[in-house]
Image (cartoon, rainbow, N blue to C red; front, side, top):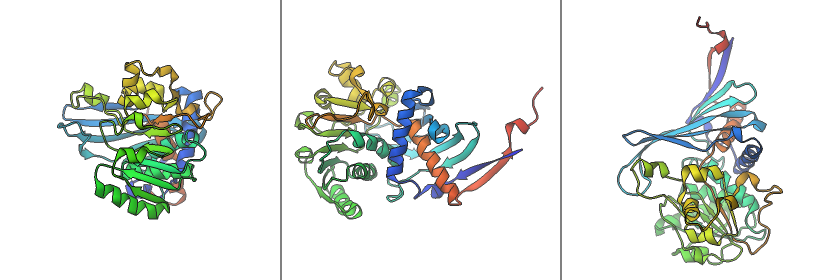
Length: 363
């Protein structure tokens, strides 16, 4: 017997999956992982002595019939605290059928959002994960968003917010570079048909906003948590760098949001509590370390929308979703959807080889 496996290359993964589909998939993945944790695992990273890092994302969503792993290589610069890279490779996903174990597809490249195209690495999965939080945590009447960041991640994150909260009528965007925030406002106000205005200070982005959304590449907090107002929702996406700290490439934990924000929040949600312990994201690990927050009081994304945590329960709460690193349940769920759409569209090439049971067995 021979097996056919669909090989999908970077250009064949473009323009397939919508943000709404991705958010639904990610919610299903985290919800299923809550009831069956064995199908989910935190991100795992390995490093070489030359600064080459490979990030691994195992997981699956059995309700979608998928299990497998994703990986991405990069090479880090040694100097400075900024998360700069000399090289970044394509992600590779191995997509297996969770019922039979058979390999369905080898995917090399980024699955982008259908209407935005490629803007930044893993932008669709990261934004869709934030989108699950947007589904449950902001107030029902949100109208104004404050956005930190003006690059590709910010565009996807904003699309996730607008997908889930169509009442948003105005976005205030802040980034350190005035030209970048002006260009972002000009481009995406037209694309999203919404008012986007650049602002000059973090204070302007926060004051009067219903949602505070951080989508940057910073390593230090963006604003003072004392600026937050009753009823606001905060999202942060910056990834952990604890492996770099432990291997000597960085001197401090990377973070986007300060301790005061965590201390003031009435409801904190992370993707997985286990990730806080394994990855030590500065935004949450340091407030826990200093006794400001108890890890047992932090809820997981898969618990939102359940009896355990329906989401926001009052208009006065400050809610905070720390989008704590990627998780294979999201990556593989989105990869499975991209595989199905690509196959239906006749994309890719098939590799043929003998099934393992057809090969001669060693004596």
